[in-house]
Image (cartoon, rainbow, N blue to C red):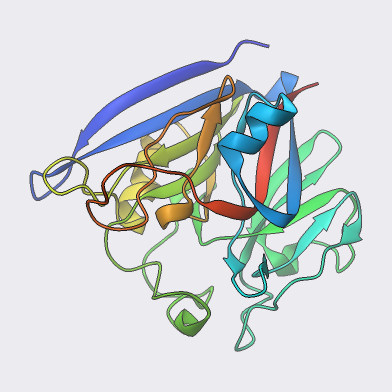
Length: 246
């Protein structure tokens, strides 16, 4: 399985920049699998100890106690989670993996008890070759901002996403929260990055200080939980998506 890696600096509309990392995996030779960490783990450290070369942060989570925010299913079995509030659980986007199939879409588009793995994240960024994130909040991120530290769809932050081209699975992360170095991306800018990388479909994953992309067993991005903290460090997380050779 040939995996390629792209590193770029993107100039933004206000003449700031951010660093973007992308790994490209052939769809025909790659299996995506969700992983749950009952005891939160730093993904890069876990990958190194488990011999997992390729992975990206998964869905959102709540602290104290740590648990997934939104549904998580592993091989057809549900993991205990916190339900998305205010009736938005059905519209909040998911990653669904069933055998060789990989799809993104609203939770309502998939069975109530799905086969395979399902991980709820969102919002949906690209669908059918078009950018679909427009800030109108159909998935309820603004309406349920109290389940997060803030409204994650507002402002520039480190971010992560998964995209599909006709032939590849693309895992993307960007840096942010470094004054004069990396501004991060808005959700709309992230959607355009995925589209520019050729994605016909793409979904946002957990971001901010949780943003983690692992390639060849090493952390690619530089995670910052706070603006200009002394050094980057990955954050313990609750779920991830592994990209494995079939």
